[in-house]
Image (cartoon, rainbow, N blue to C red; front, side, top):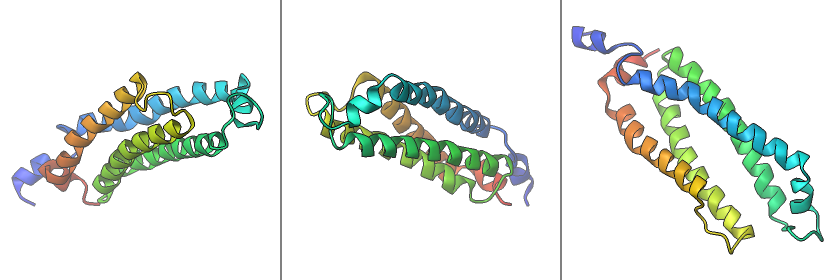
Amino acid sequence: MMTQEKDLEGLGGWLILVGIGIILCPLRAIAFILPTYVKLFSNGSWEMLTTPGTEAYNSLWAPILIGEISINVAMILIWGFIAFLFFSKKENFPKWYIGIILFTTAFILADALSIKLVMPDEPIFDPDTVKEFSRSLIATFIWVPYMLTSKRVKATFIK
């Protein structure tokens, strides 16, 4: 390996920010998801949304909420796997990282559109959705090209 490539090898440079994000992302998701879903099941909201005959009932609520919960839990587990790939410098880390970033962006959009099906009078993008979607798009525009073109990424993830 050339000296320049050897200097770029390792979890340094911009990869430090990637590593911080990999650690914080699942923690942030847990901090958001846990209280939201605990409240959903403990305050009667689940029953109100999913029981036929109630004012807020829609037959789509249960599948949307179960899908949302399942995907969010799966994404937390996948972030754990991505952390393993990152810290062990596995060759397929960049592909998994790009995949989760793209999937997250698509999921935010799909989730907003699915909620619009059951709440047609509400805007598709509430302030929280706009914030999350914007954050995800920014991450996509920064980190996907970085993963595809960085010499450090190519020199680091080779195992």
